[in-house]
Amino acid sequence: MKRNFFSKILSRFSQDIGIDLGTANTLVYVKGRGIVIREPSVVAINKKTKEILAVGEEAKRMVGRTPAHIVAIRPLVDGVISDFEITEQMLRYFFDRVHRERFTLLPRPRVVIGVPHNVTEVERRAVEESAINAGAREVYLIEEPIASAIGAKLPIQDATGSMIVDIGGGTTEVAVISLGGVVASRSLRVAGDELNDDIIQYARDKFNLLLGERTAEEVKIKVGSAIDLKEKLEVPMRGRDLVTGLPREIIVNDAQIREATKKSINLILESIKVTMEETPPELLADIMDRGIVLAGGGALLRGLDRRIANETQTAVHIADDPLTAVARGAGIVLEDLDLLSEVLLPREFNR
Image (cartoon, rainbow, N blue to C red; front, side, top):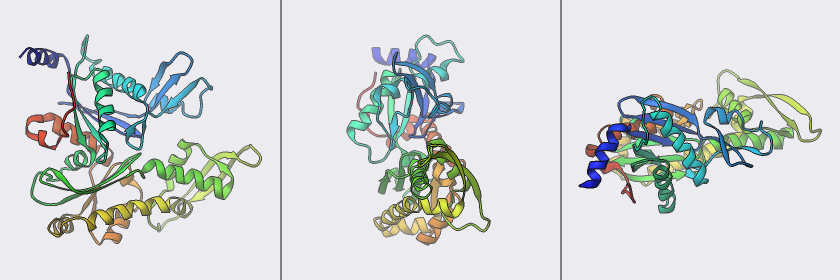
């Protein structure tokens, strides 16, 4: 009774928050307001003083451009927390930003956070503890494929099959969902970041050119594709010559970058096929009728939808604003926690 009373008091001064805690980007949804924060999951820290210097876009701009004692850290790797303390600091920063507009001495929000489908108990607990230590009153976890399916407006609570492929920064989540639960799935630690790494490795092997992460990502966005393109695309690629040690620029085209990323894209395609093979025939018939839905930043790779459609003989649709699908799904659950509580993972502990 006492706890419920304090919870009600705290809820009057706090805003409920839905979070897509991604490897590459963190998106924050505020109940009644929609998505209010979309920032890179990067924190700049002074190693000498342990002081947080910047979070998000400002910190990302520092990547590869800082003195030795200042490091830009990505506290999540492959969709899970790799640096507990930095993740906690990053979440606290986002909580404070959400509550900055209204005077709040001690914000204690309820939080819904998306986590990968195959996350372990230890990894799950790390997410909960980070959010609690950052100031959350209650923490609810939702599996990312379910959150992205809700965000894509799929009827996941019906007795029909819905298939979602969420290609984020660190993980690709493939899931067939029916009656609010995952029937068949694959969680692959190959996604947008792996494509960037493929381009870095390709530049090193083919051109003796050392690229930075940001350059590789820009090249992927500008000319990356999953199928042959009618119109040839080219982009300058700048880095350090590994032979001379001097700056160097070369021109690469879409065919070269397609060659660089071919192996990772094939792995994603294979995980989709395997998931379909494990799906009961009745649900597979539903998917053939309704199609596969793509979400996450990877859904924007040129021609990926057509490549998947060709390989699976099934229609493929890209979700509206695929980058925000998980955050919007967490937000929809947040708007009606009582009605949608069955899609959440069991809670470990809360304050």
